[in-house]
Amino acid sequence: MKNAIFGMLSCMSAGLFAQITITQTSMPNSGDTLRYSTASATGINLNINKKGASQNWDYSALKANGQDIYRYQSSNNTPYIFYFRNQIGLKTADSLGAGPVMLKNIYSFYTKNSTVFKQEGIGYSYQGIPLSAQNKDDDEIYQFPLQYGDSDVNTYNFRFVIPGNLLTYVQAGVRTNIVDGWGSITTPYKTYANVLRVKTLVNGTDSIITQLGRFPVQRRQVIYKWLSADERIPVLEITGTETNGNFTAGQIRYRDKFLGLSSPLKPRAGFTINKTSGYAMVDTFVLTDRSTPFATSRNWQITPAGSATFVSTTNAGSATARLIFKQAGSYNVTLVATNAFGSDDTTAPGLINIQYGLGVNDINTKKMQVWPNPGKGLFQLNVNGMVTVFDATGRIVAEVFTKSNQSIDLSHLPAGMYCLKTEAGLFTNLLINGE
Image (cartoon, rainbow, N blue to C red; front, side, top):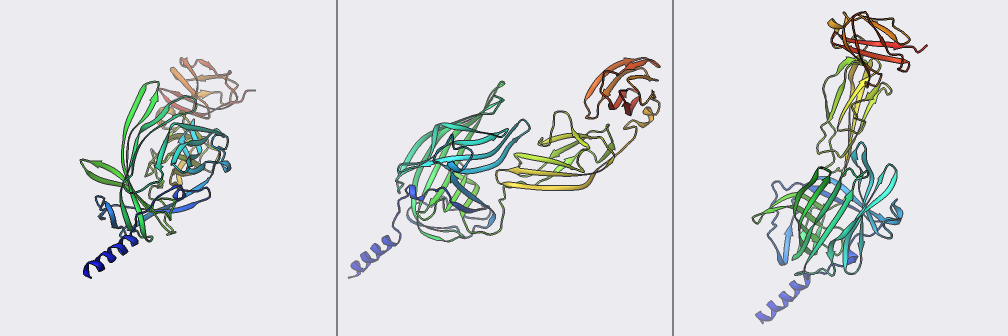
């Protein structure tokens, strides 16, 4: 009788914790909006080595420190319908890069069927034109049906040529999936009675190829994912590295409800400046993006607008921007920093103060005289040596050599305001009236 009862309890237990099968129906669909939270591994026992049949994983102690959403949509509803038809698109970034290589509206595209869920390429916009980069060898995320004890090995190869052939980015390697456990799991969101655990090993190389050569970086990732037939993203996903059998977690994500948190990987905008005061048409101000985590794109805004000019081939999207000011005044500086996880901005009101004057070398400059001013183009200087002429944007537009009381001819320059620089100092607000 005792043995019969024990056998009956064993059957009941097996029924409560029966292993499941994951198929394409548990993968994302177009139109899905799936929220997840991120958490830190600090102070948490991850129990990564707990595997096998009929397990009970408890991750209820995870503390959310950020949130975001996976928004899947049909490729037919994206700008990339001509490259990816009837596929599932996931927007991964609003913008990426800076300056002449600014990519926008970036999507990854996936296909699923009865045998596989795979990533096939990306769509992006460059100078307003929708373009694509498709995998030479598709990255097969899962093979179906997926059951306890299954394993598979797949290669992947992605090649992306930056517009203008400035450089080529290549990802190539091997993805190995091992279904090493099944059972129940508890997260801060809820308890799932039946999940599969998949251990994924990514062993590859990411390479940047330029005219100077090929620069490879090894990619070694270990990803643990708990999959439920009732969810279309992993119930829990822990990504990290493994050395000599010791796993170190780098990122934790889990399915969750709305908590009002933003992603911890979203940048916190911050910047430094080399100085905060100077002279119009003379001083160069250097703004350096110090956002953390690292911003993939940025936008510098100077208000009131109209006086600041970016120089030295920099622009409003440069990580280090250089600018001069045409007019005196007090100026606000705003930095908008963006990466794949969101945007942040910071404003320093009245940060830069500009005045009219002779410039940074006042004593020597007072010894420098230029006449007539305004003039039509012929000017006399009371100094000897090389004269460098800057226009209103800070560009060097002329270099002439003069002797004391000898004329210099600038009549070939357009009418406007200029600055002269010699060893004796600076002379600002030289006006060529062009009459």
